[in-house]
Image 1 (cartoon, one colour):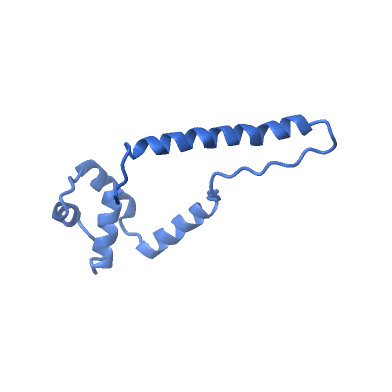
Image 2 (cartoon, one colour):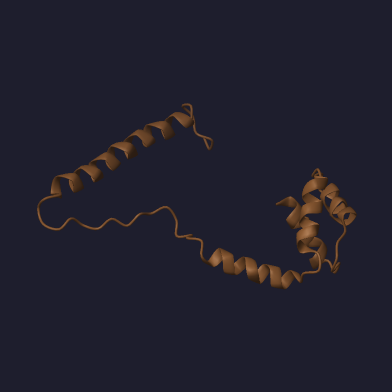
Length: 115
């Protein structure tokens, strides 16, 4: 990722065809180690391609990736057959919340940061 970021920084800086040395210089300026294999792989894959076209193609690929968070939609049970199971799930969630509260109170070690 840092090699890609260095490449994009070089392009944004006006260098339309950054070399491996350019990328190493950018990475070195922030104290990051440059992996020669990754740099050469990136440069071979983007050689002769326009960066705006590459970004547009990447956006199209990312558009198909679900990114709606971790919530799962659950349909309500129809009729009385599943009522007991549906009621048990919220009770379990309440128990887990109580356990988390105890853990948080242990973090302060008996004193407040602002006392």
